[in-house]
Length: 484
Image 1 (tube, helix red, strand yellow):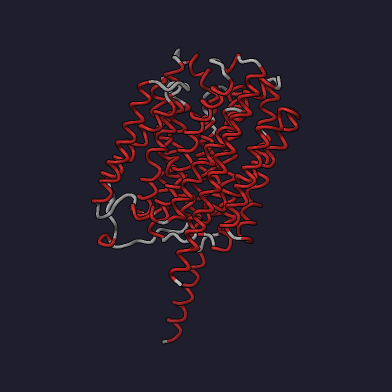
Image 2: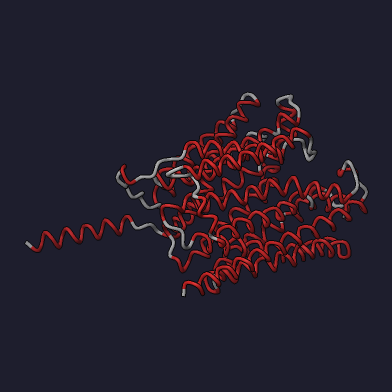
């Protein structure tokens, strides 16, 4: 009688061992997922001039190749995170990778511009799922003692993907034509799908009666609100006209409607009570501010290197590649430091490094040229990686399994909104500080002045993030003391 029972227990233990995910292979799949979705954000930008020629289209038309992808991610990233909490994160992530890969192929064979735009929108939906759920999966699969290291690795992949996109896209276009920037993602997408299917843990099946309903009204309101804001910040190539203002006002009105609707919902997309948590609210605000500053390095620095320092295109590309290299070298190390010293302290340390790097970018390059820029970016980039690893760890460590998807989506959304705002606002600051209508033909002195003022503003934004971090720590300490 005992032998069948023991045999059954051994068989169950063996089955569990088979199903237990290998952390190394899980992280490989999640890292590729983050890398591909981040690459998609920036790789198409460099191809816009070529696309305008191929399709005989205006810049206003071809910019939708970039906007369609960005809008899909921004408007849907919170909703797909919540959907993953409801229907199962593994199932939805596999669907997202499949969508991204298939849409990459459709983009690469597009016969018309609007076919390409539509395929990019579908690709953006897949990327939104991939971005939202990769961070959420860390909480499901990685031990708490290694969460910082995992977040550091994903942060590295995100930073490298975004920064590497333009240079990689340029190489692919020069060697194989514009279609290669999309078709090149297909084999990588297939590998990502295999790793995720093979190694991610199977979703736990819950009875239908226990599942929360998906908030369709909240999803629609949030998507329209975010779309209005994203378009207000991106349409017009840096000019802010009446149409941009109308979109911004529509976004503000949408925020009010969304808050009103969520307060009435039994199972809302975003529980408004979450924002009463000072730590979460502070983390989201800091994430947006930090991303705004990092976008300034991608928008402003190329003009400074070419116009003020007189570098040719090859040297500008080589100099700009230092940031991604430093990111790749510092991300995992930053995560390990977070695991060892704790997330709250490392959030502050990362922000201090970023403030120092931003201030250095505003003053050192004017005196030391390229060497000054490299020295400043070597301080700024590891600070960013440390902040990202610590901030993501601090947010996701204590989130319940049923909310990881939506909270991860909110983290990604705050980063995306920071990038969109940074491209618009910091670009406008640079243009105003340079006191010129056409930055591409501005004299070197004007560009140097714009660089100095822009990164002085960037340093002040990081100081504001530090103040938010300090305030959140004080509130958390008081709450802990009152509960004791």
